Length: 350
Image (cartoon, rainbow, N blue to C red; front, side, top):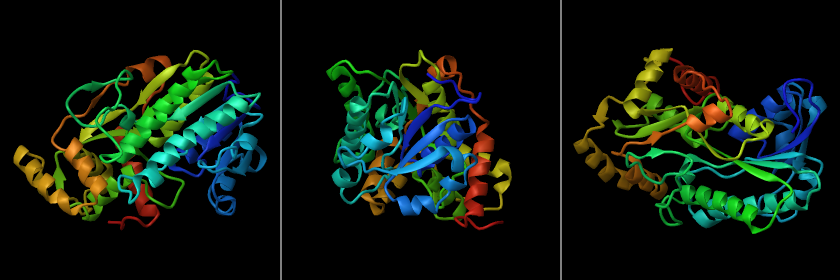
């Protein structure tokens, strides 16, 4: 493996380069000297977006069209790359057609990318972006580690979690089907926060926006797992650069209750915002909140029933000890998340 940070010249491929994680991954790869081939679904939009403005992009970034649902479309972007970061996958809790919007792109897309890697003469490692959702489907107090798999979700209940679970299982099954010329390392991020290169708001960050804008009616008993998007990108690169990296890595920093999340945002200097005054983070409040969730979209309602009122616990020992990932302070992450929301006009300045 090429080692980053010291004038490296290796070419790597990043699928979903315009995404929340993908954009930061491309930025850090360029900063460490890599040449990056980023796949996008809309070349014209990507060419007018943030990617060409990243430092080093004019010399070492190539944008190439590919579609998760188009078999063979990743052959050209991947050929000549020693490492492929498969980051592209839809993320939303609510989908009108879960199979079309979530499950097929995640599962079929993963197999299409891996098929392209298998046809390539250059690929030696694939780093796959999975999720904590592939490890746990409900908050039941267990300490979640890399040994855990989500067995609670299915296409009709929490389809996003099911999609991530099935996509990762597809990847491991693919690796077991026959000997491959490359190995597979999986990063499983928890809720991803931090500043974004994009103008849109991802699902995790939307929770911060809702808590600060008055859209969230109450503080509920919901544990929130937090990791900074920049640390997630760093973890992916470490998974590439360390030859002995293997298996799955739970990528999470801390778990906060919703009340602790609000307190952290206030402590970061945003106490003037319209945080909820109503507290429904008691056992009785949870029953009320679950009843009120009937008015939410189906996916949001299912997530609330799976995680509200339960304890979410995670163990990040493996990613810290084996990959050497160091997580930035959660107050910094949340403070910069809020600042970015204000800068992009998603929150009013107070």
